[in-house]
Length: 567
Image 1 (cartoon, helix red, strand yellow):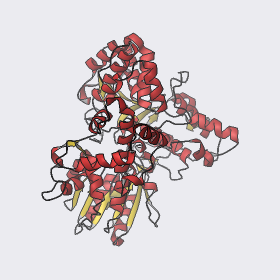
Image 2 (spheres, one colour; image 1 turned 180 degrees about the vertical axis):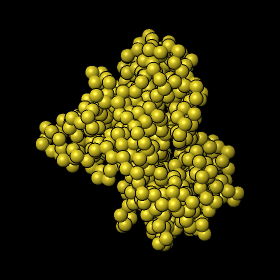
Image 3 (cartoon, rainbow, N blue to C red; image 1 turned 45 degrees about the vertical axis):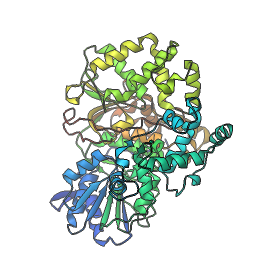
């Protein structure tokens, strides 16, 4: 046992509550609301809100407690902003930073007026290559330029030249007699020029707006889901003179691959943060698992399960449950398994089945048969081996997952894809099994959850620590991406009543906290598949993710499910 071994004993305590602004609040929530009385120009409050701890209730009560203040409520995406508009008091303008920027940059008289007619979510390298007139044979260089543009757009930098160019990009630029920085700056300028043929991304007009140094005419700013903020948003909001309330959970920062910087750990605030640690989503056993995972990160504040009786153990696979995987490939593999075991099963894919790379899977399968893929980015490859080498060199975890599926299922791929599409339901209320990646599960909750075996290996970390004779305080040097641990925490805390751990998490908790964690039951009994093969990510955790969070209709699948989501 380690020095953290006694910190995760299940606790189910009814928190002390008081009625304030017409809402019952815990003492932790009330403390935040009370602190708002002393907010002044330039001041800030930081609220670390652990999973299911009622941060939305707290923010609603906070705004209601100060009805004469004009609040700007910023959240991560439009869907969450729409939800906030429905629940927040009338003195709160709930929106996103992109919406604020769009209003300004597309206004009549603005130099960028007209960009609203040529918006695009993202550019593809083939389009960039054509616009730069370097030919489709130079996709690699176009990809490097596009990557540099993206890094500039999500940064706090004032100029594209302030962003470091990778040695590989410089070498490719030299070969073509070009400059990555010059081409990146040109693309950025063209996106913002209303009459150019190059369409404008949402991140481009947000960056342009940040560079105008705006000051917002509001009394206070409520910043929600702040762990997902990137540098450009952090710089823009941080420069405002209005006082701010930053709310988020640093342990749910899982979007580093998209440029998020876990702003909750980067705020320059002198005062100690407030904590919301009473979770109303689940009970003491799921909370104990969450605390066990967070002990790997050295978190000292304990999550308390106040949501009633729950159970960590085997989930009935003949009933309704949610399956959460680290990768899209893991979701596919479980869907294939369920269809074999329950031919008449109905499936719900969080965000829609089209978002789970089935078209890409069919393209990779075609490549394995020496046929031409439909996707032009894959069509330039002549063999699956060539695609695999590039995917490995660029650490494309999701593409590698798809490639492994082709090797695993071979000629069955087309049949399985057709069966999945046939079983997929458009709404959760008609589904037996909900399937999702950990990234897409963020903000959701389910009655019963099964965690896939393909998450980062905590057992390997413990083995390394044991070999070095070190404690958990030395763990930071062994994890290249702490967000891999965050993904395990996010997956586990989606469960309300029943949670089935994967093999590795079962073993890691047993090694970390002894033979028992939940009273008389041995921790080894928590996972029914202890002999199942492990397909875990290595210690050198790969960065990556599925790049999307979308709004599922889960209210009918789990009566109390919170609809959270993204574009």
